Length: 172
Image (cartoon, rainbow, N blue to C red; front, side):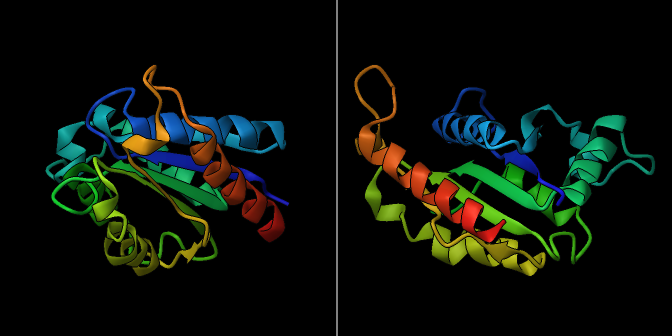
């Protein structure tokens, strides 16, 4: 079986909490013998994201190839304006309609408070489904209670991550 996953980082800033969670999951997936890769949207050329170029860059083409080759798409985004980032939306808008067909998505979102936890249900899940994805039900919404004073993950966040990993193992 093709055990490849790609992580799409939707934060415009490096080392965001959503990226930290995604990288932790990738590490665990590697231990389970998955081949993992990353698409850091903050590094893609703006002309590709805004569809201004008639010839997409090599970085953009490689991003599309990573998605096509993967069975699991991990999407990580901070909460902006009560939903995911515009950077993530812009990238996903450039993809063909059924790019996630026959794939599963694990969705990760971080926010400043628990009040935006439904943004996964009302924003990110419909977005992934609109591309044809099946959704790993143990999505992860993280907020400040999941991080200690040193910016390390708390045991509660580790439990959420482990539940998602367990479900992925059951699906695949």
